[in-house]
Length: 357
Image 1 (tube, rainbow, N blue to C red):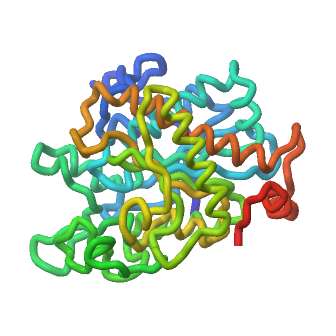
Image 2 (cartoon, rainbow, N blue to C red):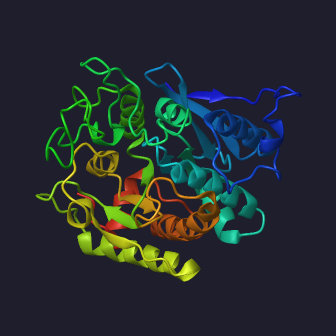
């Protein structure tokens, strides 16, 4: 069940408080989970008319999984743009991007007519860190910095963690050993059964309960500089592949215009290798039209340990690409100030050349 969370006053003498005051928070350094949580609370306080915090699940270690719901409360039913970051604990640039994205759309709301219109028509559901247990563990020391999975104990002594990005109930357990693994010591251990992990169950429940309302599903990763389409299964081709490829290529061009970085576009099974259990593929199979995985910097020089001096350029360029896809999706549904009803959503998308089923 989704739970709205109001803002509670922060401890006046917290040593981390200065890092979360609006206008002081440094979006171009990596933050531990405690600071991200405090930042979320501060954002709610600073933008009460636009932002609420929603609890929608619990981790294996009983920590809350939260998102920021961002949008103007019009009283009408609105379509949703979903974004999750930090499903892999060692991909620190992903949570940094989610925080940057939230700040950018909130800062732009009063001055950018396009953002203001989207805030009126859409709700953004942004999860800065999905794999909370793993992310906290990755901050312990240099040894744990490369930790990828969640923290559920495995079936063998000393074996921990499931790769949440291989645990969703879509072709689960296929394409081993490269695209998933049944070895609990592997970084790509897919779990003991489909959606066995509470973090995955929380996202799955949200997708299925809101599938008629979710317009775009975006999941943010690193590293490799890619924009990936469904599917991970090489035997499946997403309908309107050409249209989605064109949209992905246009987003990649928007990224390139920022700082000249090239992003590869294509289906996961074509660009990488066959992968099973992906949340983006589950979302697409639930009928959500615009589903993409963004894989941020770099191309392997620093791999998962992207230096802090690259956070700003990585976020700025990715923001341009992500915003291109969101804007396109928004414009397929809304004409002027009149929102499409659920009954006409698919008709409008089909008319725009987006084949869903």
